[in-house]
Length: 497
Image 1 (cartoon, rainbow, N blue to C red):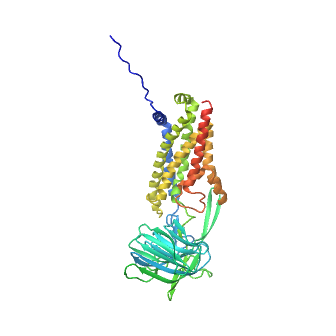
Image 2 (cartoon, rainbow, N blue to C red):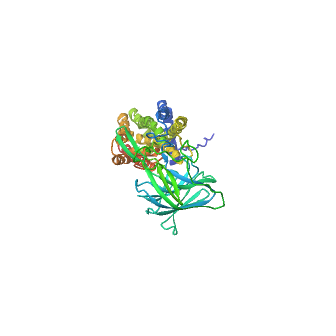
Image 3 (cartoon, rainbow, N blue to C red):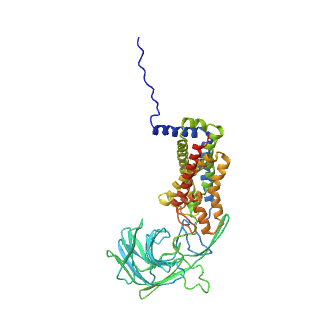
């Protein structure tokens, strides 16, 4: 009787990719099998939502009357829509031409120019070409976009041309030789839009900073400008009504713009409004239109609970590797996978992926939970269709992941839980705490050059104290994390487990 033919043994680990895949699976099984680690992740998400909800409940109303000023509405706290606007209805396409013949030079950021708006309502979409005393010609839109034209001042000819939702702005020194400033698209611009002239003037703002907070106070300023050679040319024949100012909030149609908060002062001067004499318009306006760089960022504010959630994430990142050193199980791991950098990479990918998903649940949870609260306080929270909001929410989830990986790397370097946790939290929190008591320029350098720069990803608009962009700040945090991983990998390779 012959011996049966034998089948040679073949290892299931047939390639580098399969081996690393099994290593990832092994690290995932480790993570999910430790109940307290899963509870830590759940706690991080719940704490973020709970603290964000408490912050929203404690926040004040989004409507500001600043010292009794009537009609001063600050929507969503991140833009102003003030000034004086005098317009007409424009049905379909057309163009408006006017010369800004005179303009007050104080303040230097006063604005005078042409604007097309979706409506007279506060916060309506718009595009405007303007002259400023110190910053030349600008084209602005949607409370965010700002395009520079020439550096010329008054007198200056301006032109706005509408073609559907596309708005093109031009400027000229003589009314004959025109130079294009730029083109923008105004989303949601209706068939019948409002087009006309405007003036605006930013508040004079004083900021006092101290550890733990800041005080911001402002005084309203006025802008005055005159316009002549005003001509509105619709593309097709249409009835054209009289020029009219937009109504004050809650006021009757055709009423004057925002009331002057200091009209009763002897030196207050003429109140906001407009006059027309022989085709020459004089506009006086108080307040600005554009981003409010001194307002609260509602999204960043409600995401403040992330600081509490990150404490749990940092603890998880550190303990996920120091626990193996403490129990000496890391020797078994390295015996199965001698290439120690691969083990660290697998741990980082699994931990980063899990904390990213946790961060998504936390950020979208706090956004949905605080929406009704903000609306009940007369705030207008932006929707998820806003690209800046989506970037802040998803970016904060990425912040969770990167901080967890940073904590993992620091834990691998230090190999002791408590010191590693303290070190990571210090790198993230101390620059933010110290920065509140430093001058803006100094605080900017402190935050820009430390891992705390990563919190810039939560910002949805630029404030006066913004020191770095959202993505550049997040890149700084990623750079620190990458450096920590490189150092950790080298120490794992050179030092006995």
